[in-house]
Length: 371
Image (tube, rainbow, N blue to C red; front, top):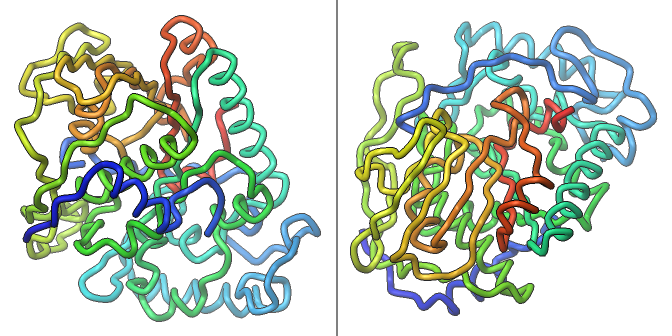
């Protein structure tokens, strides 16, 4: 498959026009199967609960999980999950979705478990504090809630789950706090000319991740940040898909995993992890177990340095990022127990990055911010 050549400026304008702006509109890693219950959410995974005034704030009248419809929705949800009898549910066109033993994934997907006003405020406070710490050190801050597959491809959920779909945590956060420094990448991922998610993987494809990174660069450029130059995308390749459910006996899907192809060769990067230099063949890829890490890429197109607070969603986007930035510092954000919580203020003061970017998988919203 081929992708028309686009200049950096043209792509930036396209992404901004598509709605990738603040506000509302990996094969090397095993899936995280932690089942920590979300904090500050309305609803439970066991039985119906009376929604508090805060949790029910501005709920749409037709929301399946509002006070009037919740009991019936609980019964339908419980029946459908029991009928599936697996740790996942099968959707449309071969799409599979994790169940609730994976960060309460399914309940979060349909809004059965979601942030209430207090939980949304905790996230708003956390993000605003990160922004203040970044700006105190002269850096620009952005955050990306990396959309879950069920957010971008809600139409691929099983029919019963679509019927039970209400407002999600990300929607609550955007509705109650529209001025947060969030780059919304859902539209670009949903409307892309090629697939951005694998049907059997919970992460975006390398191409989908690159689109998200390009959206961040476009948003920063629109805000006047200089020194982030995107590589030229000349093609999109299709390779074998990733199957996170292979251990569950689910057969592999047809190859639909999309990978961006850039003009020129990947510039060599020096990657230094907690135990020293990583192999040159790493190509700038930094897995979760290799963080905290520093990448240096003398052949990068840009000059701006980036501090990344991230999880597994950003692993396979690393080659595109190191082409863009000559130096990145990559730390686990520590949300939902994914790793140690970094001292962002101290890092910004010591390392003086130009940009601080938080990228967190949407399913982690339910766990609440660190601390």
